[in-house]
Image 1 (cartoon, rainbow, N blue to C red):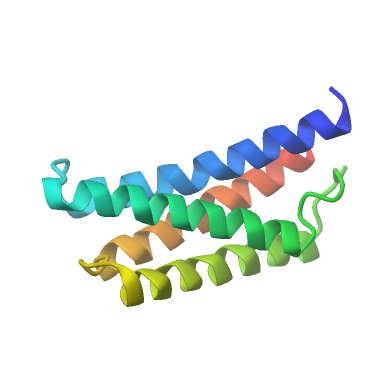
Image 2 (cartoon, rainbow, N blue to C red):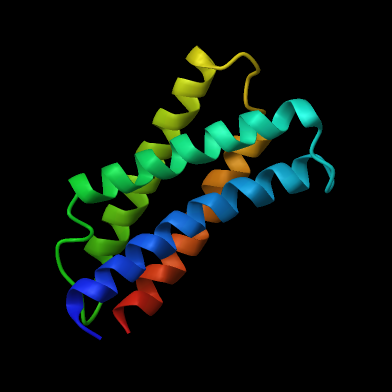
Length: 126
């Protein structure tokens, strides 16, 4: 597979990771039954989180090249991108959304994103 195609695949995987992290956070917070008033919030928060994460990763150069081996530096840069975008997304939701995103949802989203992005960095370099 060409390098550009692999980078697009990694971009899509990162997008799916953020959406999956948000989904599972709401799923576990509400024990499988997300109340109707939180569905819109979930969609807004997921869209905002994924957009910010991808923008920060692009800014930090995570999609500039394909690595044969992921170093600690790339892993730390990826973690930095996830934490910065998570913090910005949560702050924006606090300031502009009608209903505050539950802190448990935000923290679980961060945890899952960091875990899966770390795995993606390991397997993406293979």
